[in-house]
Image (cartoon, rainbow over all chains, first blue to last red; front, side):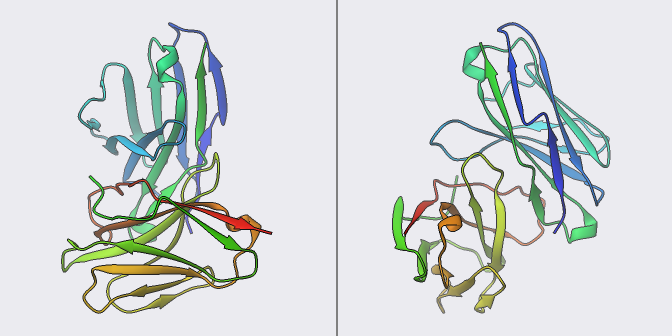
Length: 116
Length: 111
C-alpha cells in the first residue's frame, strides 16, 4: 500500500506558541488529505479535509483560524496549531488519498503534541 | 456519525481465531464495509474491505451476512501483535467522503 509520513512524531511546545506538523505522501500524489485528532481513550475525530490547491473544509466545531491547513502540493500538507493551549494536546493523524492507489485512504503514523 | 455498532472490548487467546462482530443495519446498497485497526499510538492500518461477498487476504477474512446488516472480521491465528482497536466503517468505495471512525473494539490477545 501507499506510504504516508508525518513529521515530527512528537513535539512539546509552550502555551501560546505555534507548531507546524507536516504530512507527506511518499509514493503517490495525494489529491486529498485529511487531518484527524485523537484524545486519549477516544476515537479519531475528523478535523478537516483539504484538496490540493484549494482551501480546507473544516468540520463543525473546529476553528479554522486556529488550525491552519495548507495543501500546496500533491505530496505535502501542513497543519499549524496557532497559539497552542494545553487543551490542544492530542494525537494528530493525517491521511491521504490519490488516484495512484484507487483513491483509498492511507494514514500517517501520527504526531503527539504536548502543550505545556 | 458512525453507522456501525461494535462491542467495546474482546479478549482472545494467542493462537486462536479472533472473531470481531459489527452491526451496520442501515448500510446502503453502494456502501462497502471497511476494517481498520489502530495499534497503540500509531496511525490506523487498513485490514480489508468488501461489498457483499466474503473476502480474504493475508491479514484476515471478512464475512458479510446475506442481508449485509452485519459482518465479522476473522483473524485466523491471533498473536500478541494483533492487540489493537479494530474499527468497522461503512462508506462508498473510493468516494469523496472521508472515513468516519466509531469507537471500535479493543481486542486484547492474551498469552
